[in-house]
Image (cartoon, rainbow, N blue to C red; front, side):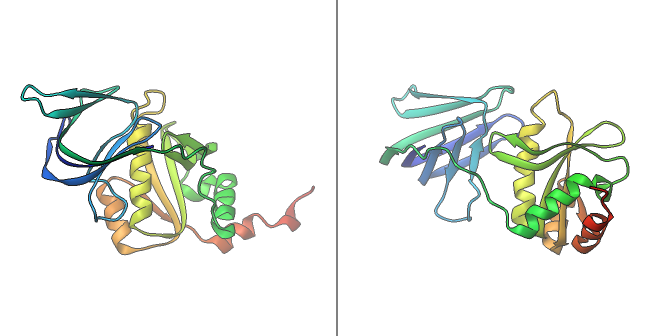
Length: 225
């Protein structure tokens, strides 16, 4: 991972246009090719970014200023970073990340929903668990009754962070013509009102699941072997 702290201006052009005026920011260039621009605030969410696949080119503008150009691999979207001053530039090998380890209840909830996908909707069937994307695994990849792709993110308590996480998965998955269009389901034992509002605004369906009922369906005493 490369970390650059610089005074910079940023312009994004493509499906939408966005401009960040001159300020000191952190630019992250990850090993997967993604480029993210952070400020000293706003929690984990970058101010702007380009998801992989994309190409970074470091060059010089007509007036001699350093300019990075990041081009998306499958669209015409472009991220331009005009660097006025570099305060820090370093690279670090983080190695292979083992991924997020879910707690016992959340992990079991994922297992139960994988076995009983009808709890997520009529006609829902499992394609695979832990479907890997460039930024991590989505809990379940399913097909609905119309054979459409569905990405399911599962939490014990559903909050805004979980919706943001699923949104990022959907953005990447919908770039894959083998999967697109992909819709999202946010499943949890409890979903906070703010998270539900954000999910609905982004076209993500919320499903409240009853862990005890699912456990009852999966009662080991009812198994033959």
